Length: 410
Image 1 (tube, rainbow, N blue to C red):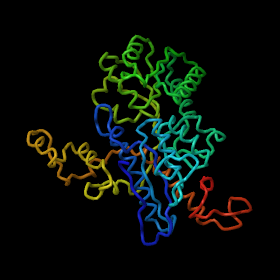
Image 2: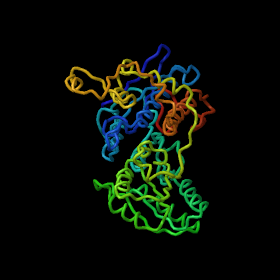
Image 3: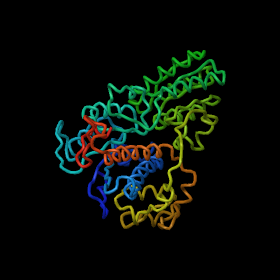
Image 4: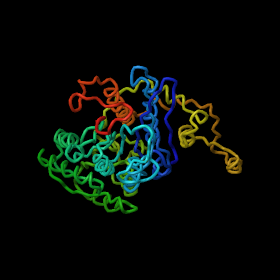
């Protein structure tokens, strides 16, 4: 594991409870965008989880005498890794042994993640067999709302059913009657695009074209998509895609100089920093769409300002984050020769101030992760303060906070 943290101890802790964030923050392959830029938002999301755990552990009124521990695992946006990580987690974290838990440590309280619906669905099928609580902070597929299929799945983000209706209402509000649709080719979006198409037609508009971003192809089918959009008379194009999948298409639109279109964005890319660069403004300026709800995270900015390589030794990404944020380089003996020959990149000193870089940070996804951690904590709080005879289980029974069953948390 590249980045992990074991349970922290404190003087009043008598029990430890574990949960995992199954995310994609761990390996460099996910922290960097296709043009090799460090993705600040994903790093921030990981830090929101650690902040929530530390905040709960320091709160004497929430889970007193209980210390939450955690691990952060990486799926690398890969289905196989999602399966391996889930099996490993269910087996105890040191190997994948189906139907066995080879770990006598603190009980697993829940799983936070995954971000993508396709991987969350896969995980939910497995976790649901054992009723382990799973809370996703970014999976919006309507399929995940079916409780009979996914009995222990929850989320802190609305289903796409609401967004699909909203997109159709948006199209109707502006009086657009000739619409293009663009979406990625995974199962999740296939379902979503059908709902959007149905709602748009119901609102009285017509569909000019439906094109798919082929994620299995290196160029994502971008040349063909750009040509279709350029030649279409449809002025408005509704796009359901992640920012990373859409990026090659936008780059191709720039190359082909496809301008004059109105882009209607799904929440998965409407506020993307990846697509907000100046070189894309001629294409995407005027984009309208939906965004995830935002709100306060008391103390998070102050927590983030204290981050530094000297006090974050378990975090292998703090230096990359620092370099990207301050446009500097940590030079050491390994790259000393490169430094001597480089006159354009200043050396990182460690005296740079993070408070200036966080002034306009987008906390939308981070807030969802933060809320997910607290959802599990409050559920455990209910177990802790349960009184025998008035509990939620058979004959008013309560669960033992140190040896509860997974389904008792959810």
